[in-house]
Amino acid sequence: MRDFKPAKNAKVKSNRRLKPKRPPRPPRDWAGLFRKIFYVTAATVSLVLIVAGGGLMAKSLFDSRYFKVSEVRVENESRVTAEEIAALSDVRLGHNIFELDLPRIGRKIEENPWVKSAEVRRLFPRTVVIKVEERSPKAVINLDYLYYVDGDGEIFKVLEADDSLDFPVITGLERKDLLEKPEEAQSSLKEMVGLVGELTGRRIFGLQDVSEIHLDQTGEIVLYTCAGGVPVRMGDGNYGAKLDHLERIYAELKPRLRALKYIDLNVIDRIVVKVETGITRKG
Image 1 (cartoon, one colour):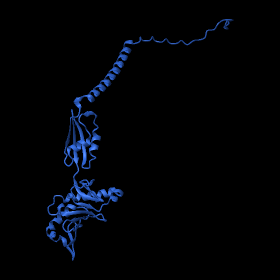
Image 2 (tube, rainbow, N blue to C red; image 1 turned 120 degrees about the vertical axis):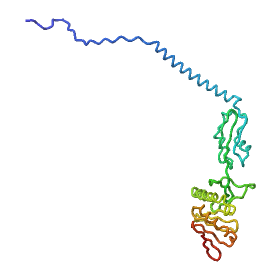
Image 3 (cartoon, rainbow, N blue to C red; image 1 turned 180 degrees about the vertical axis):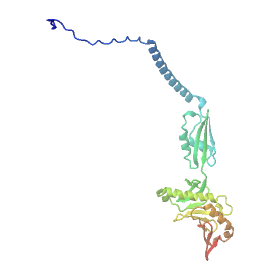
């Protein structure tokens, strides 16, 4: 019988897993690598040159005499002279036009109380154009001092000795109202200025017939006539229609104003006239 036992001192070989052979490496693409390095280097150098060139160009523009301011042109001025506005702008001839801070210049000009807005722009190569919008007073308000009020209800200037007083005077609002209840006070002021607009241009009963526009304690607007100081109670809203109605009979009322205690326009389809002896209603 065959003996299958290994012979003494015989070496037994262990099984080994054969490793797969690696595919050969492709040759390195040196040409492609050099192309990438070249492109990156070229792009970097180009960017540096562009930035440097831009800086040199900007410096040449700032230093160039071609862009030195030679004219400051002012448009739409009326109450404020062009010379005053140019002086407020602080733009000097010879300044480089690119170095001007246009919004700051506009804000500086708007510090003048007559200037509502100032638009500043460059007109190349050497001109600065300043277009202003001025305020137009519509009334005078008494707040310990007299101030002008514009069409938007903005209080913008204290009156000086040479300022005109030929405007209706707004009363009934006090300084503390504007400080403590600014929104409510501004709304009332805007409404009274709106009534000034309704009176403007009327020939029978217009601004020329009104000396004062008063806000009473109830919030009602009362006009006072120049002749006789008669109160005209305007009620709430619909001022145009109420004034139309008043103008139909005002020619009859005007000669007797000094005998009237008040005129009430609270009701839009009738006028109540209070005289010293009683009440007369007129349609």
